[in-house]
Image: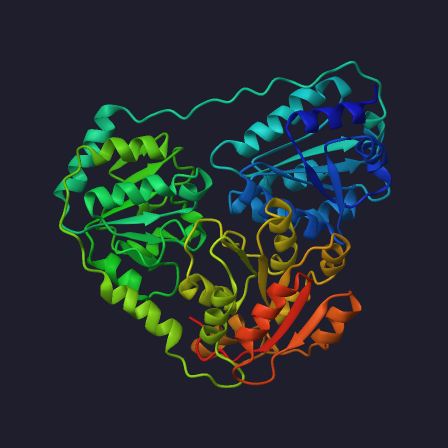
Length: 530
């Protein structure tokens, strides 16, 4: 069989269901082999960046590697932002790119860029297939490395002439290994530190969501009565209404959750990754004792994160072991924190243009708890992270590592592909929406009833806010916009424009109920972007 046929068999062996991408001359052999696959559906996108974002969010929700495909040169380079975003957010992703003939790679060629070297810093692992016989080993390693904690992006380059080679290879067996457990002496040391602490707090991170150990974390906290704060990417790990929820941290230096951390003498980090929110914010004086609980050792060193004990292994098992020997404390009173969130969320007077709080309350009312909200990057992301009520993990998807604008619409397509049975809404600024608005065609072609909400302030509001706070000139941040309603209609979508106070909630509910692809243009006024 052809090497490209073997490649597809290996992808089928990894239980790949969808590949997001674009065809090109140097991946035609692979496209032909995908045409013959009975279990893999190829989803044609309008830009490679969108394909990578779709694979990222699909993988994050499914807890399995999303796959994206591009040709050589510009196609592969267009994947780079999405691949880097998945890698920094620890989303499982496998990128596949074509390349010029292997036997001519040493020469100067049309569209040739050394993509393997280029992708080195933005992936966990990547390689070029130099012989057809190596395909089973390379594909298996790419998926295993991507799906090994901490999850991340891997990349395979398949040169055009190698794809056409004949081979008698076969896919490799997939062996699932279980996580190790922390030694008993480590559990005992962690318990001693927690029991000695006067005011311990828990910082829940993305690793808790990735490893699907949120229930175990909440059970541990309830058993020992220690409160939990969440990072942006662990929203929903504990519902904001829970008496042990401190809210979401990751905002500015003066945030009220951060103030609570300053009162603590010990921080228990559970599944926390440094990229989520630098420890210099919550341990600026290097004075807190730290118990680190994670499935893997930390990759990086930070002087603000000198942990006293490292509990490595299955997070759920180690939390259960700790709960047996950690002393039960008095129930902390966190009512003041929950009241601050509710007041900030609901106390803003309705004016026009609308305040972000009012819009978020309306969005929450239009959504069921199982529905998914995908946030783009911009001023609105801070408000969503801080105030949007989230009751379950992976129901609010936020890009926070690379924090790349333009992720929301393609990310919503990835989310809807992963969870077709739930409603999916995306929230973008007017700047971020236009970066990948061409994927409206992809959503329409696939008959996806996505609701895309645009916070329209006529500029790059986050940067403008920083310029103002730093007493700089407001410069380079204002722009014009198309008519978003007509733009939506040109793609075959329904377009709505909010023109007065009181329209948002019913418009959102109507859009969700319609079962159609929708775009809602909402003028917004950010009174403060923290």
